[in-house]
Amino acid sequence: FVNWTDDRPGVITDNRISQNSMFSGFNASLSYSQLGDQKSYTAAAGADLRYYTLEPAVVPSNFYGGAAISTRLSKRIAFRGSGNFGYSPFYSFGSFLLPSSVNEVRIPSSDQNIARMDTYTSGGSATLFWLLNTRSSIYGGYSLDYVTTPNAAYKVFSQGANVGFQRQMTRYFNLRLGYGYRKSEQYVLGLPYFNVHTIDTGVGYRRPISSSRRTTLGLSAGSSLLSQGGLRAFTVTGDASLTYQMKRTWPTGVFYTRGVSKVGGMLTPFVTDSVSGNISGLWSRRFGFTRSGGVSLGSSALLFQNTYDAIYASGRFHYDLSRHVPVYVEYVYYQYEFSQPGGLAAGFPMSVRRSGIRGGLGWSTPLVGQRLDRQ
Image (tube, rainbow, N blue to C red):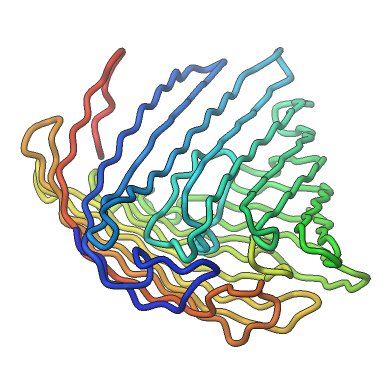
């Protein structure tokens, strides 16, 4: 493995993420899923480690895991819940490039490490749905997200609840009427907490737009009222997607998201516009390609004036030596830059640029049940 880096020192500098370096790595994961009409359950856990030539005496390791369940409690009542956890010896600022979800197992991304700090993450959500009829339902939910590090400026605890009503007006069009409240606390002395009132009077639209049904368009819109330290701001939020199935083994898609994010190291919330895309496919039964990337533009919403731009891209070629043993070559690029230090914790790197190329060998096999073939 080879990794080239060019970034400014973080809160705690570390040669492994601030200098050109070679490394070798190992990762392992275990997943389980049980899918059904009335109940679905998934769980996963994993770990990875890297050996850097710059500091051979230290082998940093990441650990992560999570589980989710979806079930019908009765004919009209359904429940969905999830939880996740993770640990990394480095702090990473990079999840803003793609929409994050507490329903997913979060895998630490070593490519986006910016500072040497032990970082623990955890989160979860629970939602209850009550079906009024075949078209209408009401829902209520709660979620939390917790990031803790030795540095208080990077420690964040967020929690929120929401209730609402939704109705499928037509086959492709739905209406939502709801309200949500989320509070985010950062453990910096004198820094007021930040909260978001979400007025979810939005619409959703998703339908195929071609006769072959290979192209699908999705749209959703809403609004949010932000407040922090007596200041308030209003913003429109939403998302859009366009997916296209070129062939059975060649899916592709473009996604847009506008939302409000608050992460450790940033002392104020940011309104973020992100565009991401992916394409993958098989040229033969054994040889395939995967590419993904995203561009994000953000601006501070309250207290401070600041902006940032960010880019992430990766491309991978893989070849299956056998059904269970793939080899691959991958290139990754990661970059972000803030216009000024306002609204950032002391020592937060204002800019990071990193690229690398690596190759590897994998192995996977089912332990119980049936193996799902890769697309």
